[in-house]
Each structure stands twice: as C-alpha cells, then as structure tokens.
Length: 500
Ligand code: AMP
Image (cartoon, rainbow, N blue to C red):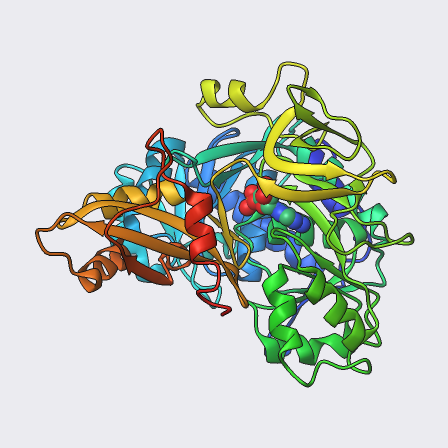
C-alpha cells in the first residue's frame, strides 16, 4: 500500500507484520501500536485529501506535541503533500509571515488559537488539533477508510522547515523524501538502533532533531519511543530504567545532572545518550560520564542538511568534537581554498542529506548551495589529524539558546522601531542552563526610554525563546573605526552576566 511512496515505504518497513507491537508509550500508560499509528496516518491522509490537499501542497501545522501530530506528519507525506511544522511558541505576527511565504493549502492549529489564525489565514482552510489529540482534524479523520499512499519519488518534497533568517526573514528549507530517508537510515545504522530499543523522545517535533532524527530513526528501526510532550526531568528519570537510548540538546543533560536521582543504577539499562543542536560543553560530557559511566555521543547537523557528523558508536567519543562525517556525507573546511589539516575555516558539506534549496528564494539558495552540491554551513570548523571535526564558532550571527536558534537581527529590528530607542545590539551570552541566553543592549535616544515597555512589546511579538533574558541600557555601543558594532567585544564585556 505504501510501496510507491519513497519515504513512507521506508519508514513503515521495519514494523511490517508487527502491527500489534507497541510504538509509543504515552503519559498515563496509553500505548499506540505501529498498526494504530499508520492507520491513524491513513485516516488523516484521507481527511487532508477531502479538505482539498493535493500532492505538492504544503500543510502548515502549529500544534502541541502529540502522537496525532506524528500521524499528521505521516499522513501528509502519504498524501504526497509537504509537511510544514511550526513552533507552537510563534506569535500570530510570526505566523502570518510563514503562511504568506509558504501559501499552504491547509493550516492545522491548536483550537485555542483558531480564531486569530483563521483571521490571518485568509482563504486557507483551518483545522484544529488539541494537546489531547482532539479537534476538527480528528473529527474529520474519524471513520475514514484506509489510504493508498500517493506515489512520490526520492526527489519530491516531503517537508519544509523554516530556519531563522539572518536578515530577519526566515527561510524555508526544502527537504526531499530521499534527504530524510537517506539520513535517517545512516543514523539508524551508525547508532545501532534496532527493534530492541526504547528511545526517550522528549524533543519538540517541529524541529529536525525531534521530528527527523528521533522519530524517523525510531520508525526505521521498528523501535519503541517513550513519547513525552516535552522535556520533564521527572518523566525522563522515570523512563530511564526501562529505556535504552535518549536524544537531547545540551540543556537536557545539564538539567538532568542537576538532579541527584541521576545515578549509575538509574542509567544502567541505557546504551546510548546522544546530544546535538548546540555545543555540548566538555564539562557536561565529563560530569555525565562521572555520574552515569556513559560517554555522551555528540553529533552535528542543521535544518538544511539533516545530520552531517557524529562521534563513533564503537570508537572514541571525543568531548568537544562532533566526530566524523557520517557515511554518505562529505565535508571540507574552506577559507578561500581548502584549509590544511588543523586550520580553521567554514565547513561545507555534501551528500544525499543536503536539502533542495530555500523555498522561493533562488538567490539565497545560490549563495549557500553551490552548483556542485556543496552546502556552505556558516559554521567554523577545524579537523584534527584523526579526522574528528570541532565546531569552533559561527560565521553567522546566530544565538542558540536551549537548542533553539535565534537571529539577533529580527529582535534588533523590533527594538529599534520602538519609541525612545536610538539603536540596539542583541547578543548571546553564556548561560549555565540554556547554553546561551539572549541579551539586548539598548541605547536610548534621550526622549525617555522605558525598558519595561520594551519588554511588554517584545512579549507580544516574539516567541518566548527569542525574548531577551536581560535588557541592558547603555550610552553607546562598542564600534570599530569603520563604525561597525563590535558584537565580539560586547559578548566579552557581558560574558559573566549569568555565570559570574
Ligand atoms: P538548526 O538548523 O536549528 O538545527 O541549527 C543548526 C546549527 O546548530 C548549526 O549550524 C550549528 O551552528 C549548531 N549545532 C548543531 N549541532 C551542534 C553541535 N553538536 N555543536 C555545535 N553546534 C551545533
């Protein structure tokens, strides 16, 4: 039934004939079997088609993390459409950009936001899916028959994930069936995932990490997941003795380390802890090993490329490095030409994992994706004599806070527009919990500036993870002789803000 759909045929292969086996353990003791999951996806695929979704159409989804949302992802791909997940934290202002840019054929949102989203959706139909799996999508899907997956080839689009835009405009990364399938298969094999695994799934599913790395790898292996609606120390510690693997951002690890219940005994059944999406500090790596005897396996990837490198499963997992290129992925470090071993340059990657370009932004695509297939990551890297790659910095002006990306430009533009503000600079400052925290440095124009008023405006306009954790008023920003704001100097000046 799924044979002609490139991605679905692969994601369903390991659970074929195992329809009654559990896939997801949900809070409250409920189980969803592989049979339930794919039958649910088929009913949703029917509901989407009956709502007018055609192959190639985008389905924009801003919902809580539920197993029904996973069914919606699978159902969208089954229907030959393109899944477009959006962070539930996005405000209506942020959403209206995504809807305008991606022009989806259908929007699925939380019932609580239906009215405001219907207003900005114009003629697009809006269905709902709540945090307990209810809503008009579910009503439409219930009672629908089975669905024959729409034929899709390796190069057809399966998903668009928006990355934050360096110039304030988010870019939609177009990911094909083969981008997703090839990468998840490589990861499953590299990390030895099998049907015997139980993965603690506490990552959000609007991002590549939770949606593609965690969900696709588990499905491809026919493994089980402990499906948690979000990061929760108690739930993860409870799940650990019955689980074998966890994928997390560094903040997961620092928060778990802060709890005395994390012990060797509790982690004894686990075989693998994986970290990525932001740099894992060597200190965290060492503290985790001291406490649990496990060496965290760090990997590196991004929305546009899926995963590029990983520390080895069997070999040496080196703290402070992101390991070696994954099978099927090529890497090179460039500064003009290719940099000699040990030198620092911009990391380029190439392989089946690399995306198809940015949605309706041919110029941006041409800037970053070269005609011969190399993608310019914007991350600064160094390769040691054994081939291990370290990410030593970022060319792009990016803040990663708790694993979420924030581009300063967007926040600066909002602040600069407010009365009383002359200019602002937004920087990332080291933070013990979030890795980096967003800090806004604001210069008043002398007409009277109220920091609290700025905060109120930002709260209404920006998703919570983007809001500055601190706002600091200064007389002037540090600039170089060319007048360019020196973000590096600002970062140094405030480096102890949260740790000092
Ligand atoms: P995203 O597109 O949200 O997945 O963010 C991708 C960016 O996160 C990359 O370009 C890197 O800057 C950063 N990143 C991801 N994994 C790591 C890692 N293990 N170490 C350092 N930076 C990372």
